[in-house]
Length: 459
Image (cartoon, rainbow, N blue to C red):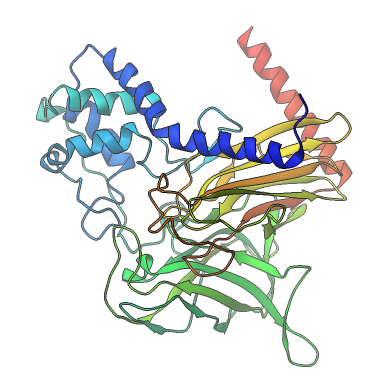
């Protein structure tokens, strides 16, 4: 049976939205089944404390962004049923990347394993026992809640660039802030890691904070560098930061200025909404840099790629789908993928079409996307997709403006594209390393050799 294009899009959209709706029940069924087979006693001290310490306590502590503390056994026991629900449904830790589709080797992957989820569920179902206190691991050495996320790995940022301060009222309409500030750097440097950090309670009011490097031209005017400008990074609620692979350079140009594009929502959204006036609100850009003279083979850039096919207009109680296509005239490596939307975005995917064979490969799928937790899904270096010239990236996003979407306040409203939190957006942030044919062939050969070694080791 051949379906017309509009029917095919509707069918795919229905499948994706159905997958998002069924996600919770499917995940809970899986882990409940696994937990049911856990006959041995599961205790907090021996089995559950290491999971909570390593995956939960970073947010659920005094001053953290989590809504309650999970520092002690008493804390965990008090919220045991809630922990079971959130962990069993795949909502916590907040990293909503499908387990059974696409590339699974990701850097800074927050997801619990199936075994860890089953352990937590079994502990709650067995009455949340403490066990032997002697089995309790030593408390972790957590960094301060307002500290830089990459500080344990790299120390303090080499450069911190602040936006200009602005007062954010307790209530009101969306606010935009576009300051331009000097970077203070007098030589070209390559970026190793990068993070944007809203200060203090601003985490709940800063919807996004994008930063772009600009340079003075001969007329003394600030202009973008490159086709889209040199994006430093993109920040949206919940994002950790970005790591740049070794051997490539995301450039901080000498004498650059940072042009901020900051979107704020007065009062905030999410569990930590401030609902109060925030005076002198600032956003900080932290940069960890390679040494001067760092040798690299290829340049990497981060760009916003719009997903424009399909109308981003939703009637009341309606749904829609958008998709976009991207190709390069040279080989590339895809280093990270981050879909972006607002409250009605439910699912997103990234695929590759190889025109010579017609094969389509699904790289990433997020069936249960959340506007509260934007994540840059950074592929491990040895599995990051490498594309020959002419291959096509296919980006798809599905939206739900119905009562089935828990993020929708009023499904009776029409929704259009726009920058406000109540509007919708449809694009993806993708980090790309630009290769030449020689580098592309070298990567192919390295990966083939690695596969052969694994086969030999298994034999």
